[in-house]
Length: 249
Image 1 (spheres, helix red, strand yellow):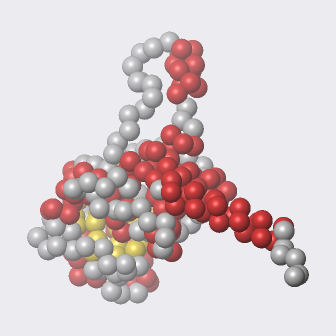
Image 2 (image 1 turned 120 degrees about the vertical axis):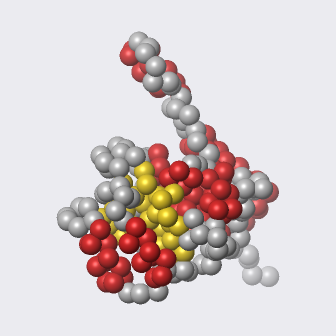
């Protein structure tokens, strides 16, 4: 890990996924160090989406063309379906990546996932501490399958529980997490939608635009109830004004 302190600066953020482990990618890591403002390579074990050990890479402030990046990627992970690079989240609503949220996702609470990065040790440790791991409702220990199915059905989370989890994971302010929920600015609202999408990706939960909007409303209702109440009052007043236009004197 580098000893240089690099914080998110609002530059364009990309995520590259390579279907291969990090071993043998040291030259590519050196190239990223010279060709980006910030980068991090995280190695994840096989999961339901990618059946082999693979790497997630955050690229912030690319100093060369996307074509130059593509050529480097083809050197380390060639072949159809062996790599992809995205500027927006995969699930709806598709929004540009947020550097802090993507960095936290790649580290996933464990600095051992970090294979190479431009961030300093303190930033990596802070990001790891910001990730909250939620245990599954039912243990995978040996229990009767019928009972397990019943318990799973009972434990299935609802929208409100999901939104509590999103708030805990991405917007709980502490010494180790400074991502603040802000519904008053366009950037803050986009960050809320991105947190919803990042959470849905991590949970492998289908998220339509309409469902994301429901989650957004619930998050605002839970996190800033006074602001939410004012929004509702504004909507009611607006409807009342147009449904009951003032009479001419």
